[in-house]
Length: 288
Image 1 (tube, rainbow, N blue to C red):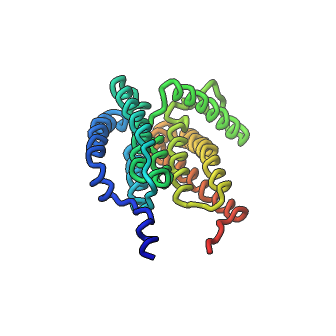
Image 2: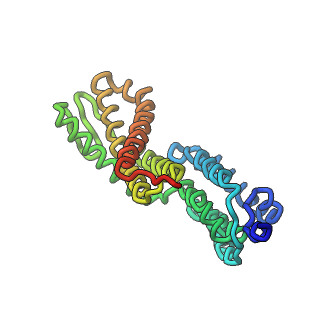
Image 3: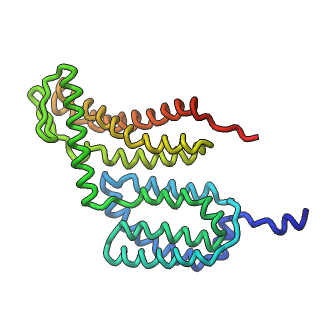
């Protein structure tokens, strides 16, 4: 019994990790501090990336949640992603490329976990590292392309729906005309932000739910994007109808902000409802 305990791999604990790797951790904090300072004073101030601090807190929580994970045999292969991450960070920082500067922390953390507890420890914390991807802002050209396509699609579906219900509505591009009012589907109404946020929330929900069926988990992640799109159509329909019945001031006031809450509630509620339906066909296996 004693021999088995002696040969069993140690548990990963924060104090043990800090004591063994405090020089590396100090260097990591020195890299992280200026990045967080720049993010908090620039990118996270925008409405498009205001979810950044929340995503960061989730990443920290996920690491803390599995802080006592079983560690395996460390591997020197961990230096490869560490060096690659450092090179990527230097390039991203010097050229002011957020994609590289923030993304560099993914291989850095992965390499540190490999050096500490091998592949088993990396697998345990793999989702926390992967979740960092939601901190990375999309490149400008990609945002412009996605936003333009989403605005066209949303405005087109809103026009078809309300026209089918008998409302006097017409569309020219992303401009909707209903009664005496003209409303433009702006970038903020494209639903790209809600799509990105719901994908993050959906991935987190699937991870925490820990369903035994991989098919069920995969379907939940895949349905997040269509749900966000449908919820955004409902949001725009709501704003158009409020403007039509109560005027432009009502549509651009409190109701405009409240519609965002409605969008989130519909999308996440739909995700939960879909999970319940999947549970009937793909129930979790009961572990003996």
